[in-house]
Length: 564
Image (cartoon, rainbow, N blue to C red; front, side):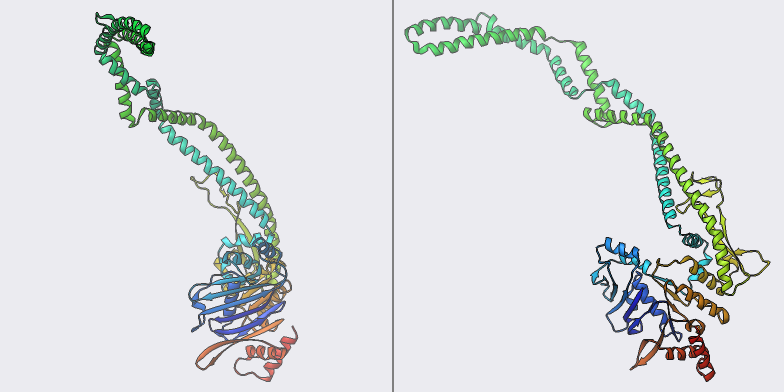
C-alpha cells in the first residue's frame, strides 16, 4: 500500500507531501488546480517514462518519492531476483534532470527503468479519464474476460504452445523451400558430379603428368646422353673404369714400397666400383627410355582434360575435388530431404494438435466465464442505476481465407491468445437487441461499464493501489452516489486514490485531500492539504453549492460526510 508521496518541482507543484491511508483516498479541487498532476507524478512511480518538460520552471531537477508497505508477493520476488532487499518497506525515488541524467532509486540503490516498470504494474494501476473508451476497442474485451476468469496461467500455456507451433511451421517451410531450390539445381549438380567423377582426378596428378610429358618429349636426347655416359665410363677403349683399374694395379706396387699410399689406393678402388655402378645405371636407363608417340598423346589428352575442367570451374584440381565432395553431399541431402520433411511434418502435426487442444480447453473455460461475467455484470449495472441493461459476451471467428496459414481450421484462426475473439454487446433498453458497445454506448454508460468491470476483474492482492482519474465523468445525481459506493466497495480490497468533482463521491472518502492553486510573488504554486472532518464538510459544501455556500448547503454536506 502507498503510505507516503512526496513531489518536488513537478509542473506547478513546488513541494507537496501526501500521507495516504487505507481504503478510499479522494482528491478534490477546482478545475485546473493540479489534481491530475499528482496522478501523473504517481505514473513515474509506476514506471512511466519521464520528460524534462515536467520540471518546474527555473528548476533543474524534479523528484517524486513514494513509500510502500506490505508490497505484493510478486513484487518481493522480482526485487529479490534483481538483488534488492525486499523485506519491509519499499521506497521508490525518481529524479528527473534537465540534462537528461535521470535516476531511479529503490531503497536507496540505483535501479533500471525496466525493473521499475515490471514491479510498478503490481504496485500502482492508473485508470485515466478516458480509459473507459478502451471498451470501444473489441481487442481489449478478451483481456478483460481472461482477467475476470483468472486465466493468466492458461493463457501463458497457450502462448507457449503457439510459439512451438510457429517454430515447427517455420522449420517445415524453410526445409521445403530449401529442398525445392536444390531440386531445381539437381540436374546441374548431377552433371557436375558425373563429370568430375568420370575425370577421376587425383591430387598432384597434373604435376606428375607434366613431368612425364617432359621425359617423353626428350626421350631421344635422354637415351643418347645415357649411352654416351656408359661408353665414357665402361664400354669405350679409353673408358674410365678400365684405365682406372690399370692404374690401381700400378698403385698397389707402390703401396708395397710405401704403405702410406694405402688410403689413396682404397679411394681409387672405391671410385672404380662407383663408376661401374653408374655405368650400369646409365645402361639400364638407356634401355628403358625411348620415344613413345602414343604415350605422349595420352598424356597430352589427359592434361587437356584437366585444363578444360580447371577453366570451366575456375578452380585448381584440389578445389575441383572439394567441389565434388560438396556436390555429392548436396545430392545426398536431396535424397534425405523427403525423409527430413516427413519428420518435420510429424513435428508440426504434433505441435498443431497440442496447440489446438490447449486452445479448446481455454475456449471452454472462457465460455463458462463469459456466462458468469454476463450474470455478474448485469447485477453490477443494476446497482449502478442501469436496471434493465442486457450485457453479453459474444464469441466470433474471422472469415476463412483461401490463403490462410495451416493453423486456421474451419474459419477459426489460432493465435498466441487461442482460437477466440470476443466482443462485448450491450442493450440499455428493454426489448432492444444487444449491439456492440462501440455502436450504442454513451459516455456515461461507458464510465459505469468500466467501473463495473473493474470491480469484478480486480481481485485482492493483485495490485496494491488503484488510481482513478475522474472515472465518474459523465454521471451525476443518484447514479453518482452509486458510483461512489462502488468505488468504496473496491476500496474494501484495495487502496483507492481517486480524483473527483462529485460531492456524492467525495463524501465517501476515508482520507480526503484538497488541491488548491495559489499565486505568490508572481509565481503559481499548487498546495495539497489533508482535510480534517470539519474541513471535509466545508469542501463537500463547496462542491455542492459553488461560490455561495448557504447554511442549508453546509448541513447537507455534513449529512453526506457523516452519513457515509
